[in-house]
Length: 164
Image (cartoon, rainbow, N blue to C red; front, side, top):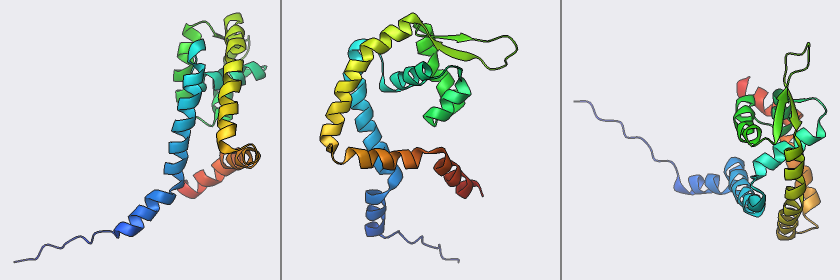
């Protein structure tokens, strides 16, 4: 009769340390807390933090398309397309195709500009609260670190490591 091979249990201390220091876990936890703060603060204007981010990006671009918006938000095109639908449905964003162009341009409507006007003071309040919690002296460093992690070059490098 063959003996069943028993699987060795991983070291619990090593697992606890991995859970404690995991970059992915800790960044996602922090992102959920920050997202909740911004979503709650923006609630009076009917926008979520992710929607405000899209409106802000669209307001800055002269020829913003879904793929460009996805790149600037470091998101999948399908996710951005899906998340744009409520903004389009509410009449905050319109989609236009210029003659001779394949891609559709995203444009803020007058309602979109009005929504931004209402949202920005609320955003400023959430931003101030967040920076106060982080510490005004710590915020520039954290912002720089986050930009370095989210930068296109870093994302490309991480993807190549994963895929290659």
